[in-house]
Image 1 (cartoon, one colour):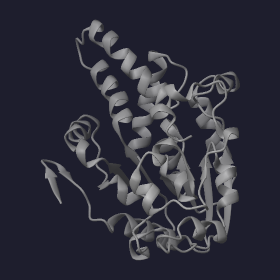
Image 2 (cartoon, helix red, strand yellow):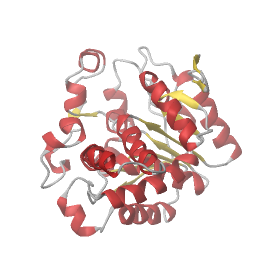
Image 3 (cartoon, helix red, strand yellow):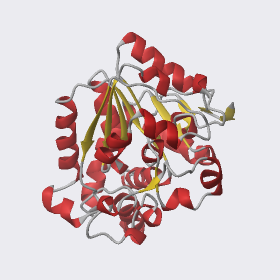
Length: 306
């Protein structure tokens, strides 16, 4: 599908085929998606790098940078200097992706980023990165069956909850309305970490880069084949780190929790989810998995995950 000068979205089956090739060849593969918050964060760095930029303009842009970095992406501390450093690191991770998910309605803005950052990887509609949820299920369009016999690693602030639900009887009950079948991984492992929104986390780690290094070390010490990741602003760097280990790293964001039947405010508000997918096997994110000391109304699109 042509989308404009220098932009093209690959076909719906492209993403599945790319993962299949990587698994067959035994090579690393990494993907993630860019939405509004990532674009806003990167735009600040692009503006700051322009010769002769008016400091007053950057000062006006700072509240937007902090909002999309801390409240939306769980990156801390709320420091412009830190966010500029993090953005440099993020762009390096972004350049290592084998495939990038984009929002079709943001293609014009993505084309600007592609030119400014020199992005060369293929683009797909971000929805094609999510496991298929057609009704009836279309496993030929879904990459989950490729994971049969593989070691699956879940990386999320609710990873242990998802790992406990990652079993046949729960999965098939959750997706009963579509007929989706369990994909029989050899093992399901979990790396759970504290939310970057929470002041408690800020006392444990000096900044999000330190939290990333901690998670990177835990990944390197874990034997896995494919990682499914929900980690806010750290999602793409963690996916790239998995790829460098010779594994598959897929940054899914919030879709990871619904894959295992854990909904929240975002999905409860959408009639498609309520009428096409929800049943008694689904649960709401438990209170124990809310970020402590955090006003949920002020983070993650108004507490979308809880």
